[in-house]
Amino acid sequence: MSNAAAFSGGYVANRGPSEEGYLMPAVDEEGSFFWEGTLLGELRIQVCNSCGKLRHPPRPMCPSCRSTDRGWKQVAGAGTIWSFVVPHPPLLEPYSSLAPYNVIVVALDEHPTIRFVGNLVSGPEGELNEIDPATIRIGEPVEVVFKRFHRADGSEEALPFWVRT
Amino acid sequence: MSPAVGFQDATAIAGIAQTAFSKHLEPTEAELACTVIVDACSDAGIDPSEIDALCSYTMEATEEVDIVRNIGCGEITFFSQIGYGGGAGCGVVGHAALAVASGQAEVAVAWRSRKRGSGPRPWTSTSVQLRVPGAWTRPFGMLRPVDEIAMLTRRYMHEYGATRDHLANVAMAVRKHANMNPAAIMYDKPMSRDDYMASRWVSEPLCLFDNCLETDGALACVIVSAERARDLRHPPVYVHAFAQGLPPEHQTMVNFFNEDPLTGPAWACARRLWANAAFGPEDVNVAQIYDAFSPLILLSLEGYGFCKRGEAGPMTENGNLEWEKGSLPVNTAGGGLSEAYVHGFNLINEGVRQMRGTSTAQVDGAETCLVTSGEGVPTSALLLRR
Image 1 (cartoon, rainbow over the protein chains, first blue to last red):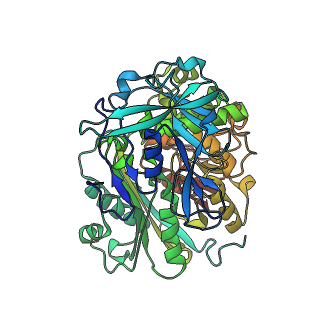
Image 2: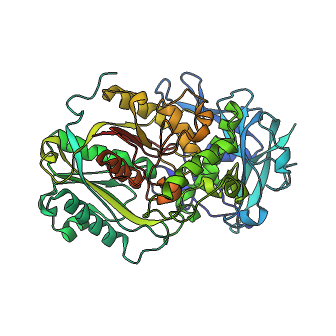
Image 3: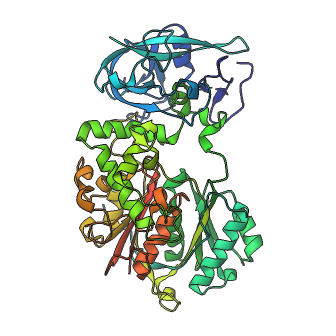
């Protein structure tokens, strides 16, 4: 990537927010496979090529077998809500204009200790605040959708959001 | 687990000091730090030129070289910093005590100076905070520490049936103690259960009064050998035991990515702390528990073994955390919620006052005090005794 930062922690880039001002992930070398996957509509999880154990967030070494031989596998993207919060201001824009909205943690059905932070929405174009927070329940089944965001420089990210199944 | 060798009661806190606590203080963080360190030396009856060890938080803005050039130290032979924000406090004192106990230094100072009241809220930075793990959380609007701890709190309430009334019990106990402490920011502001329940949401399930204050202030303490402390002005407050804790696969503040997110750093820290101690949680007379957010007290009560897992909610009932009838009065000067939020260093100084017998909410006959640092981040704890 052209604007790669020479950083010992392996940072690739913090390319700034989306056109609407949403914060976009600062993608490091370990996590780039994940964000390449979301742009293709795939939910990918890092896997140890030595012992097969999954780990998230991505990192260089498997804490179980200490192998650095690593790859990723695509998962189905079905899970349940493990917990959720409803932020109110003070927040940053554009989040403060949407508040109160939901933030959820999802535990994957296939791997219940692999969890993702995300938002419960009605579909891939959904907004963070369109689901009534009073209706959200821990344990609700959800599945992943991907919402695309564009930056002013033309680059794109896709974030994993979640819809009720 | 074998106890730490040669450490138990080998050192003592001989001097403490603090600045005023306020939403805004005029002096810089550097000036506050220098002033409070000199004051802590005066409290101990030790000249600042005798200091040979300096221990601080990585988030401390004033470096050791600047402290030394300002307060007129001699040769410093031990200096260390500890990371992870509010998890550092007891560790900073503990490292100072380790340096003295091992003979690396003779007069050690630990301090924290912070203008969090007039300075920016760290979470408003969108450049630094998007690094891993923020990349996995902040784009989704999980922007602030309160959102991160609220997520654990909701899960905790779901698993164990804890309620907002339990969180209110914590906030009200701590406020009651602040109302007895003229130095506390909330000294003249009582809080009822109705006040708590009527306050605005910040991140559901946490409301305004589940959040700590935003304070300018500085605190310091002086650590010397137990032998020397016995010849100084105040009765020695012995550093009985010390521990740090960083559990497996922990992720700072967003500890959602491991097997059991509700057993955080406090559990790891507690196992080492109690292994190092000659007594257990049942022998602790008073506790100063890190309270950037009220639910951290629930998690810590369980982690340090004052109740079984899931039982911290009921443990808060019937004024059990309150001076003077509760079985375990906590944060007897008002803590981070109601005295001042200076990354938990005010909890350390209040622990010392309890052991000296000079707290404004003095627990009668208290001989032992637990002090803890941040839960939800790599943490630390001290056991103090008279």
